[in-house]
Image 1: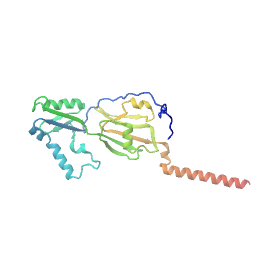
Image 2: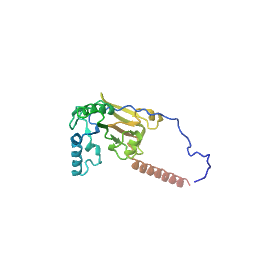
Image 3: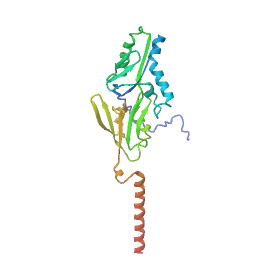
Image 4: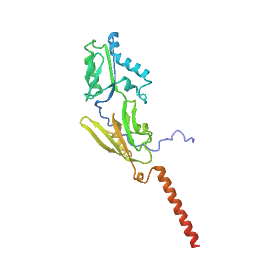
Length: 246
């Protein structure tokens, strides 16, 4: 590597600072949430942890749960079709349509029935981001990323990137909303994506990468083979014509 002195800057160019546009997520039916409740009472803690201990034992007996090793699927709570989860000691509680902060406060109010103020701790978070990658991905399928936030580019990387036949200027995103589902088309080449609502993937998003027109000819390998054969044929014909005229 060259020594360019103290005044050199390895950055060739940078764009302007683009602020995030991150909307609060509202819990939906079939989301998996990680709920942890701890109190100063050993007896209550034992009751609250019954479900977790049972899930851990089932996971060890079953060889680790899902093939993807999704620990939250085994130890978390799935919001059912009625928008509720059932917690030990507390019972059923409706979380559908709440933010994680609102859900935390709701559970805290229930815990206060058993212990005094400042004698408990409640934590609630999404059990990872689950989404589906379909179409022209190198490794399509249903994917779980164990993070609280996942960008669209991290989601694509988790599916081993788009293949060379994918339309990068028209990635389809099917997103669920409380009132139903909507289909969106996003341009991965547009820098404004970084400030849009689609820069971060939401739970249960479906990403569908459409193929380019070249798919009509065949896949990438077949297309290259066809193009090579065509080029060879044209070259051979040109050579024959050249010899014939001499």
